[in-house]
Image (tube, rainbow, N blue to C red; front, side):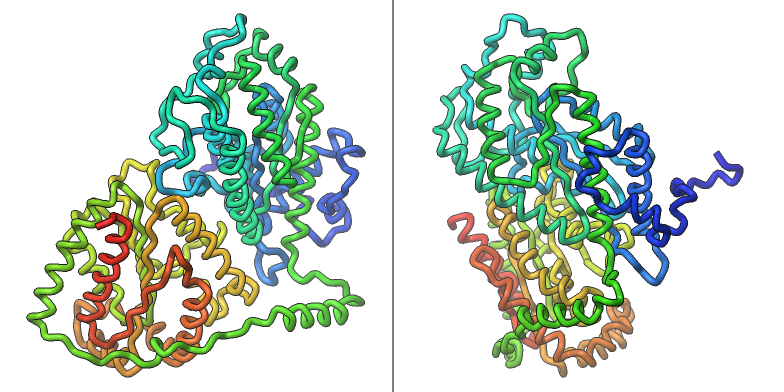
Length: 576
């Protein structure tokens, strides 16, 4: 430890102080499709640590920025006793172990009312890091499918040489999660092949889309599937070496179970062609193969992170191609709907308002407590001073503070910028893994900031915010499919009413904190925000997560309308 007792990040090798500028470093970082056949171990170790530090350097740049900060997530799955642990151990010995994050999970039932990937999002690596993730969301999926595809008799011990450890690993403890609708109950027979295959294929489609969104947001993936034959597996299960904790909680001594697992794996590997299959018959060879694949993935991530590094002779050609691509995919703003232009001016009597408010709050509280544990996400967006905070205050008034969480979303922190854009929202969703009793999340401003303020202020590129509509729709569709209730509001007022409210805040001491310089400056871009809102509403108003537009200058009426819509949505869900 240094004398000043300060901790610092590991220092990169001296050879990397001028990364991307020296020819030898470029050669080490350029993907070589034949490297797994041509590199000896010493060269491989050097190339691995060089690429590792180069990836880390993508988040430590000073202007001019040459690379987008980029990370690598390595998913490790496959048969037990196929050399997964040996391979990752070798990788960690060959790179700087301080910069290699390793996580491991054991497969379990997907948790209630949340997408299968949600429980794993907090573990995702920062941009610039390399992370190896044993198990991950595929362990949960495979565990669940195996429960559906096997009967209790299949999990009975059919191998006389089982040891106590393997017997313990073959048990299927009850999970705190929920079974899918098409799952069998305990002690039932296995589901028909077509039924569990349909569930598996549906989940694989969703995971593939999730992973594509990760890759589009600077988290590259390498998916490695380790495999051995049944004879090798059985021999290793019965040798003298201690067995690791198994990923899928199935009986690896049962040949019927193994055959079913291979059948499930075949469906997975056929549908997703981005898996690297590693033969684990020889653990040493498998480890070398794995390290080569990780090197290739790091090098590819580095090459994809480079920003507009075009040779001079090709610049005019590249510019012409880019202009042509932009023209063919030109973004077309929608016509601004009437509800965003014609704002209601009707007033409501204070006494009538108070009576209606109490009645609606009581009804809302009843519905929220009758939803049988389902997660709820309230998403509030709108113009500055449109009444989001006031509406939220009345929404939660009848609830116990322990029943909900409110998130006031502002500019992202540095650590949030070092993850995919939606990561800071994924990690705030209601979560069955936490000890917190609240399963209601209320967002005052949301993930829609990418297509609103980030679009207008230039914090996101055209490609990023235009891509975000589909990313957000997939995100919300996954929530809805898992049973989460998503209720979205856009609160609209006119520009004159906004000025009136700004002036009132300025003169009211306990409200002055709500008014910022940005609020005043944004008034100059009023038309831009209205157009962005129109585009957002047109592209993200879906069947399962529709928008509720509340357009009124009367804040009391807006609060009642918010409650009315929540009551309507929850009544439909609760059947009352």
